[in-house]
Length: 423
Ligand SMILES: [Zn+2]
Image 1 (tube, rainbow, N blue to C red):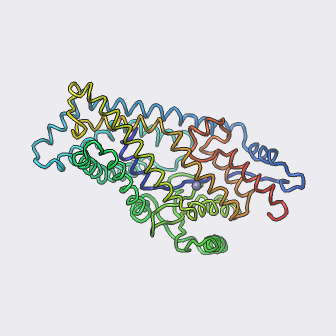
Image 2 (image 1 turned 60 degrees about the vertical axis):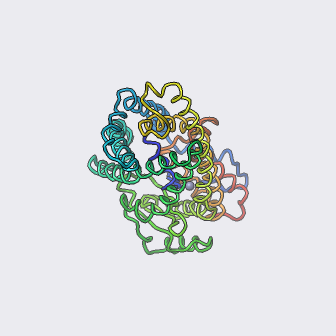
């Protein structure tokens, strides 16, 4: 459990749609007797047993990490609440007269300490484990620099959001949770707006596509779908990993499609076009705005639920925990713990919200790029970091993108219906 406000902010702020990632060849799929299921199996069998085992191990390990990180986060909340640490921080800042400044300082100290407590888990999950599976190109120093940048961003925006939420709690009383959800959405839209211009460049270099035939084809696809050519970028993701991906980010005038350099280096033109088609789907179908709207509804429910739970706990144990009311910043660790728990419970719902958009983008991409084998090839590359063939419920609960099997099957179905006109 990272700090939930940071999570919400980053989730809303980036509202990016990381997609893709490659493998071998689909020979003979365009025969007259094309069988969708057989073609799908053909693609899935391009993975060796060793590759599949590694991929499954990495992805399934991620399920456990979600559990451990939640428990780890609850333990951190316990340290703040049961050792008197939270009350101690409040006492430390209590000499300041202005309540907003007090809450700002409390928030900054709380976030910094939480980050430090969480650091051992973060190092294992984001650095050592990624290297264990050969999924990271970052040196420890490079990784740490990125973490420091994230920390600064958290300390700049996190306390500010907290101050505004506590202001809403004091002003709106029992209806604070509706305001709280609105504030998070507001910051989410703001974060999404500035992310591609001010935040993403802190981690990667973004530039126009390299001149050449491929650029001409990609920009032609963009123009054909009413996407301004100046809104398509490439960035140096190879400094972090070899993963193939692309995303749509931004809000209003900053909305853009970004293709990573691994995609451009490792994939064929057909594969790149299929990824571009998928990203254009996000762009053209306004998934950024729809995602924010859906997130807004979800946040209202989440805030309402957390408010109910918080009030019940304070009613029974407020005195022993040293928390006087919802407006008392001493209760922030409890609030964060409840947000974390509720968020985990809602994970199948939020994953399904995102996965639905990803499926839509896949369909748009197939129709726009008309490269079903390119699509299937790229889908197989996903297996580098995502289990290729999960169970039905496993996909619903844990997947924020359709599984590789699902995506390849969609591509082969599309191909089956276009045997006379696709390549
Ligand atoms: Zn996507």
